[in-house]
Figure: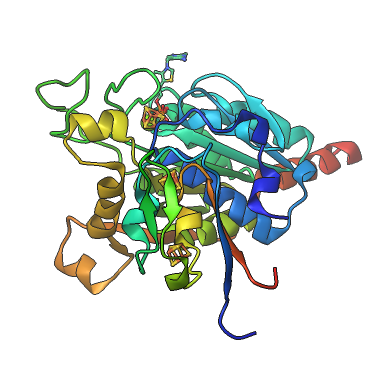
Length: 267
Length: 69
Ligand SMILES: Cc1ncc(C[n+]2csc(CCOP(=O)(O)OP(=O)(O)O)c2C)c(N)n1
Ligand code: SF4
Ligand code: SF4
Ligand code: SF4
Ligand SMILES: [Mg+2]
């Protein structure tokens, strides 16, 4: 199957702005699924609300477009009742880590087998460019016209500390790495977090004079480096990308099944 | 197998939003935006079939079709 066979083509062209990185995330997520040859009917994509969350409307899988910040809660319900299905939950930075922060850390702590994708454009795109917990100190947003004084989360450190058993970061420049990481994250048995740095040229870009969409993508090449590279040791401003954590831990649905078995035996 | 050979750069004009990402990053400068700001394969003979334009396009508007596919 080709990537386009996984699309609901009737909704194209999609609603994202010209040059919005969210489309590149969709593109390479489908590529990963195509490489893994997973049947459409074996995938459930659950999303919340945001420009990023609109991704679930465009894919020809089982899809749920739910409420802001709660996609992981809905996905947990689906996974617990149908552990055989592959759950993919793409979220915006606000969706995942502002309103949805609590759901995020507890899903990670439980190690439930869900692939969580944080489409990090460092802004609330859908509602007009308000700052998010990932905007960063000194950046501009419609709600921080004199510059943001909030420090940002490091999504990778947060996911790691919360107990996620697979944690990775990539960007919309590094598309081959993105497709490869998505593949590994989907195959991983446990809670996988993939942070993708993705451009919002319309709000974050315009507010922060980051240039065209292509210039923002080019900047991901300049501002990131592979984990543990020489460049990373010499320049701590560079953002590391790659797979940070990949470990085997007991998975939640499997553990729950064991409890059911025990209870059935009456001890 | 040998080197992949290009059959066609299939660009869906109705999906392309003219962001210029494919044009900026094509290693061999195959692509251009036309007068309507739609991507156009101006020099297909230089295409190395690296697939990067297809993978980076945010609008899923490009398909690199290889000979023998
Ligand atoms: C409970 C609730 N609170 C607030 C909103 C308004 N709202 C919609 S999307 C959004 C934030 C979107 O930002 P993000 O999650 O980063 O996604 P993006 O649009 O940037 O992809 C907010 C605050 C809402 N829909 N529901
Ligand atoms: S507002 Fe930003 S995040 Fe939303 S579609 Fe436009 S570029 Fe993408
Ligand atoms: S990257 Fe895609 S949407 Fe952007 S100009 Fe090229 S074909 Fe058009
Ligand atoms: S496949 Fe590679 S060489 Fe060919 S047009 Fe696309 S980016 Fe350029
Ligand atoms: Mg956002």
